[in-house]
Amino acid sequence: MTDELEKIEQQTSLQNREDEKPGPYIEFKHVFKAFGEKRVLEDVSFTVMPGETVCILGRSGVGKSVTLQNIMGFLKPDSGRIVVAHEDVTDYPDREMERIRKKVTMVFQNGALFDSLTVGENVAFPLRERKDLNEEQILQIVDGLLEMVGVKEMRDLLPSDLSTGMKRSVAIARALSAQPECVLYDEPTTMVDPLMAQLLGDLIKRLKIQLNLTSVVVTHDMRLAKKLANKVVFLHEAKVLFFGTYAEMEKCKEPIVQEFLQLDELQLLA
Ligand SMILES: Nc1ncnc2c1ncn2[C@@H]1O[C@H](COP(=O)(O)OP(=O)(O)OP(=O)(O)O)[C@@H](O)[C@H]1O
Ligand SMILES: [Mg+2]
Image 1 (tube, helix red, strand yellow):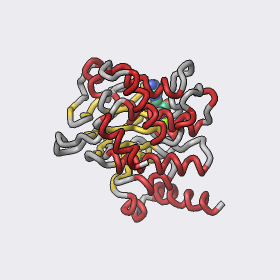
Image 2: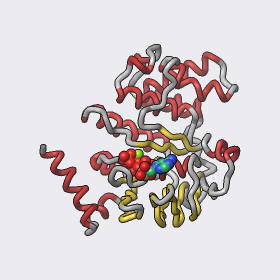
Image 3: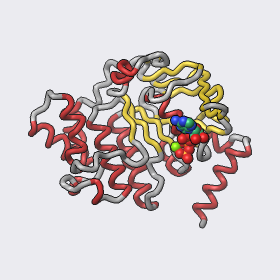
């Protein structure tokens, strides 16, 4: 597996980090976002340093996915500034955002795979768009990526033949084939069984370490956050209630944060 990874790293130069810049890779500076009367983000600030994994926690509807959409530029803030890939992207038009989206890719909750393409073709899609690889190179990278995420034998199946967890693994492989510097995951472990959740969590952790990816993970899953997070952003009622390490969060006195932590302990006991 390690050999396989090294090969992929060479082929896709995923680990080409000599040009790493100082300062946060992603930063929210006093971001406000409302939909009509509904205020979703109010004065939200946090940073994601290069190579860091930041988990965004909070109750359903609190604005976690909206935060990711703002990073991708699918939504724009009402006020505040957003830095992505070391650039202030707040006023970037779509054309400029497309350049940023080559560096920062998102793994959607439902996988968002192309239903009519096989698993292999899905993963090959971003590689074909590059137009600098021949068919043999593409197949080799696809096989390597599928092996890396543990679904190599699924290459010729259609997404409809896969379980939710496997679809998510394929979506991760497809995201990686675009050679991103940063991957955003929206709820990577919901709606899969605990074993699959653990496998996906381990996979994200392995990618973080071995590919030095910067990652943002939206999740309700406290075990996942504990496993992955360098920092946690805890959103509540449109505000950042807590921003810091997981260990610091465990000591945080905010009742909602404590409730979240205790609820998870109860689930573990059940
Ligand atoms: N495009 C949109 N137009 C209008 N309202 C929206 C839009 N996107 C999100 N919202 C609203 O913003 C709020 C936050 O939504 P968001 O999807 O970010 O929640 P979430 O924290 O991701 O929740 P969940 O854990 O259930 O996925 C919700 O009230 C939602 O209805
Ligand atoms: Mg969401």
